[in-house]
Length: 263
Image 1 (tube, rainbow, N blue to C red):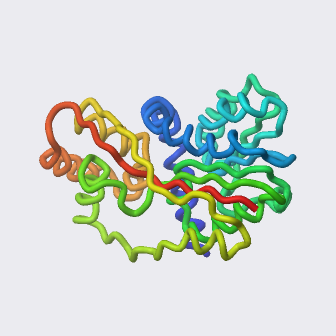
Image 2: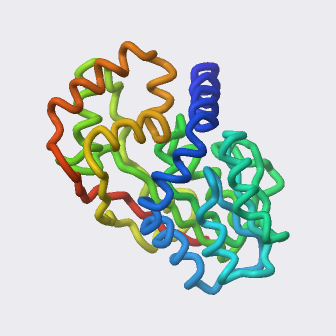
């Protein structure tokens, strides 16, 4: 749909802008969830075939996968040229690892039924139709192949900076209609066996509220919002966010959702 195409184009531009800052600020903070997603693959007895990492960003999964599968083809896909450029820098020591600019929501048919595993961390929730995407990723798996996906659910925490950011944005913009959560049903209905479906929380620390806000809006998920709404909107949002936020170091415990399935 044209609306979805426009949304993906905005996302690509936003992540191009955010790539360097995201790699420096958020990749270390998201590392426990990356390790969680990869562990579901590296601890399994995988069939032959490549490992695919859609929405790879700067590709922090690569090193963990190469440690376990040093000779296997590993490919990351991301819509953002800026993210892929940094992913290629990160993976340059490993000739079996590639990073590709492409749409992770609708995979190239060449992956269909060929992959030993699909691993994705914090990409699913950004895409226009997550249910359709989940089916596409399952279709990439060959017999015995494994899917491991970590994503942010609609509600990640009851307090903390993610919750406050959602609150102040909702106060100014329509949040849109919530989509029904049917991921477990999608997995089993699409011919895969669901192994794990759980929420996993790790601590995250920010020096203070302003550090978080600036990172989140310049180098994180709200970069697309900043591009769409402009400086005046973001300045006003920042003022309200800081007014409501606690002072000093901010530690919170957001929860992400893990889904693991196999063919």
